Length: 152
Image 1 (cartoon, helix red, strand yellow):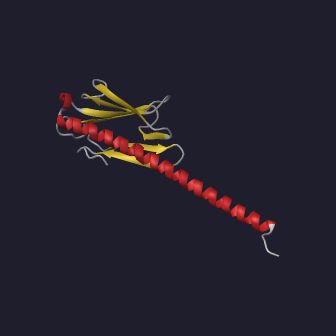
Image 2 (cartoon, one colour):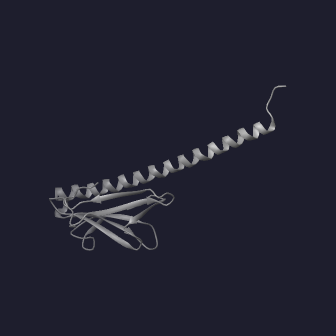
Image 3 (cartoon, helix red, strand yellow):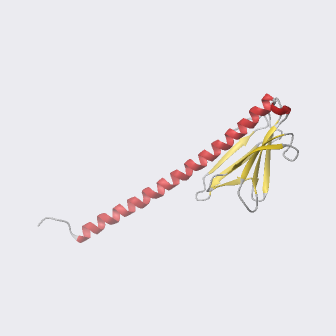
C-alpha cells in the first residue's frame, strides 16, 4: 500500500502553519522597520531644507522646525521661518505617518529646532534629538542636530 497516513498529513499541515506564522511575523516587523526609516528620512529632509533656507538667507530670517506631541490629537511638525516659532511664520505642517509616534519630544510638549541665518548652525548650544518609533515595535530612530548644524 502506498499513500500517506492521516497523522503524516496533520504533521505536514502543522509544520506549514508554524512556518507561515513565523514568516508573517518577520514580514510584519520588516514593514514597520521600513515605515520608521521612511519617517526618519522625511524628518531629516525637512530639517535639511530648513537649514538650507537659513543658509541662503531666504526671507532674511532663521528657519526652523517645531515638533509637536500634543496630549490629545495627531502628532506633527511645522516648518517655519523667524527667530522663534512664536514670532515666526509657519509655512508647512507635516503629520507623522499612521503607526509612528514621537518618543522625543515627550507627550504634551514641543521641541523647536532653529537654524541661524547664514551660518546654518543650530540655535541651541547642545545636541538636540528627535526620536520616532512605531506603535507596534520598539524600534527607535534618533535624529540628532549638533550645535554646528550637523544632522545625523
